Image 1 (tube, rainbow, N blue to C red):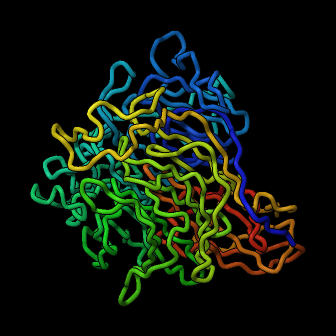
Image 2: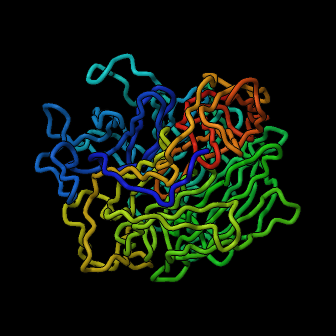
Image 3: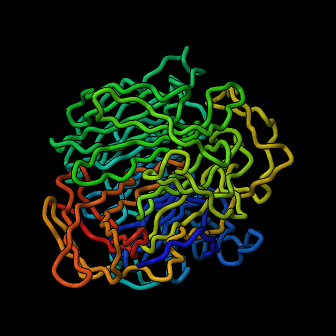
Length: 579
């Protein structure tokens, strides 16, 4: 029986650009940009996008973080590399060439594993990118037909565009494989949304490439000019989306904007259920709470949403929060129920990462302020692990700290190994070797006038652009013996059993599917874990698992499959889930 160690560990991996991250799909590297996505199986990589001069290539000091003395440019040019594919196995970078600005974009995945990255920021000729606000970019799931420099995979941009210009929208893959796009602003480089630039609509990117329906207004995204300084209304950027299981395979999505929550059917364009407001405070950007759809467990797959921390509605100095709540959206009378508070104090901009043992890693962020450029201080250095199955008062465990601040524009994402990649931090937004506060501090311009909040980074503190990449190893990585998963298929079918073998025997065996998702600005788009029904199979270590019953429980696509024995997970195997 494997033995669970007591604490996690950190390790430096290399240097990378400021980012967003998400692992790609099977047999493909991990990709990091100004946001973050999910890695793939045999050759995990990350992709990083850079929206400024880039000094994060070879020559970066991994101990001190000092930037490379040499600019990291496209070969034969003075143009900074805007995106890279990062191979976690070799620590090698491959330069990519997005044609539009990916900064502050969103992303999801089509059923075949193709990453859909859309929206973004203004054109920048010096950076070699066009207008990103209405752009739709795709990145194929691989595998790459070449190796190393011979690989030609890159972002693809077709004729299709978003129907509305969007900055800071959120994405979710729907049960039929379409990608949902919700909210945003039609002006960028700001902290506070305003009624005149608010985009209170949603639209669909069709998985089959057909013409989408027209955008539809989502009522909880609407607010008036008089409500610009009412955070429970106007803090609606990067709204929270979680597709909910249901027997109709309907596009019924838990949706949170400001402090208002609903279940909305995004194909029928209809309100399914009004949920209670989140207690006391707004939870969306720039409050930037941690929100996670907790693992869905067979046979009922009843959903529970966890919301922790963020920042208060106080003006002009929002206060980071330490409170945590859960809600069961399908309950007859749903209520927000207080759970254990964050034990290390208030936290905002913290990533919540589902780990294969069913716990949640809280990592990155700040103990002071809110999201936005120079809006925060007191970096969160010590991660937390939340166990939803632990008793009240014992749900959180503090982990060893890092030494690298991970503030605004930080990301984290689960890897197939069970480790977590951590990258980014750039409170300046543009490149800065210094990281000190700007002129005019603590006031800042917002949509052409002075914002009503203060920048809360302390004048004496400096947080330069961070290029170093770290790997956080959860406690289970130190197990003396980890199970080895074998015999699992390349593809699994809804409602059908499939076999697999674990090299380790134990008292409790679980089989889980995990979609690591697309991560940016402390929002985990499409992140999901499903704990399957499992029974013993024929032979030593053999097990039979039942795939999810339908696409609202787990949307069609590519997932990491883990076997977990007495709390210790195997390495993940990429599998495709479909009908």
